Length: 199
Image 1 (tube, one colour):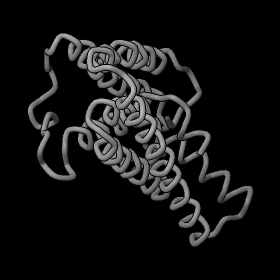
Image 2 (cartoon, rainbow, N blue to C red):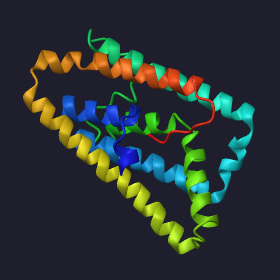
Image 3 (cartoon, helix red, strand yellow):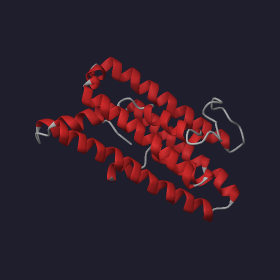
Image 4 (tube, rainbow, N blue to C red):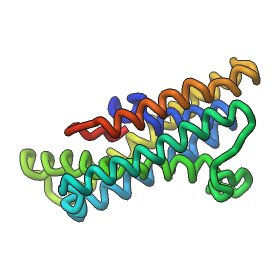
């Protein structure tokens, strides 16, 4: 839970979605983040993470992830001036559950493929040091996904609360600090050496 609540690009995206579009848009973004985590956890359990242990592949995945985060940072900044650069399929507003909040959060969550290495490390410890069996790993995986969903739902609530308090012009300019934070995370991903962050 503490890991998921820590401020990261996905957390900021969920907060921004609920701040500007309401609680349920934030919840959709939370579900997308949980789905992305579940996918990476599943791949970790399958052992796909070994594919990413090659240092050269790691560097390319880092660059790809940073590029996508930079794109979201630029998009957030330009939204202040009413300029949209995101592809049309991400800007879907009235598509039921699969709205722009859901798709944007899913893309942002998957934009850091090194997350799979983080989960692989966690599950290696659980399997090797704590002798977790398949059933226990399943329960632990479920708990990890639920922690993502519950903590980001809380972030959605906080975003909606802030949206009810702030003026419309202040909400519009909230994209500026979010863009700066996303830019920071993109730079951090590029210069990061060994540590792998899941947020």
